[in-house]
Image (cartoon, rainbow, N blue to C red; front, side, top):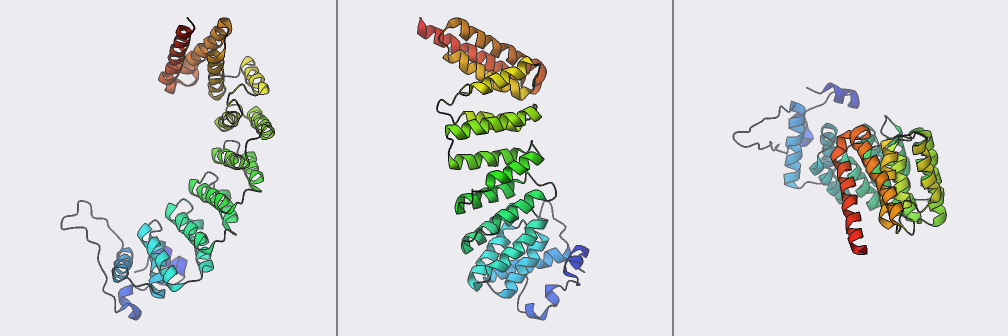
Length: 332
């Protein structure tokens, strides 16, 4: 009668609720799929019985220790059931339960369901109830380190929430630097780095440091979108917000291009850079030179390096032509 996975988990044979004396006062409430269900799901007998009793307990409004244990069984079979998680929280509040025990339980559940939104949400609510983030950075670090989950959105979301809510920023740059060293293409880690820097503020010193950090990573893997995006984001935080606000970046990117590098991320950066120069240059010759570089690179992107977005690069070129034409009319 028991599922083999549950027998292994519990080290015992599962006994149906209908055969348990302590549940004899409850009449199970079957799922109502209507008279003519289009697709009838083939639930296992164990799943069906557990949730029939779960529905009966919810309908009765019972918040007891046995109800809490029933939610544990229901969530073992379907850890994504939001209604059960919500009712479990209601029971915990009613019983004034030991929430540390709940955190221990959740650590085990997250270990088996690290990409389950409902589990992480429940964890957040429990931490809020306790007003204690003591274990959250370690928990999320374990979730990100294990089983190739370094880009797990739910773990990162929970980590950012804990850091922002409880002001846990201090050592986070060291943590993300380790992850970036391990995988320079981990865009989640790059995003986390920007998240932390934004909290501390982008002073000229920090901008210069982070620009150098990004360029060093690009030198290692030039065809890596993550540091290029990060570099643009940091440069936009300067007083001017221009990509040419740091001369060393202009020299660096032009040097890569002149050396024959044709990474689409380098070309996209240079296209944006030359667009800015073309639109802000007062001298016609310089403006035409920058604009021509944009047109040439857009053509290369559309025909060679980013063909799947050829229409986009054609639009970028034509849009710049339109902007420059309007500018010229204004000067006449």
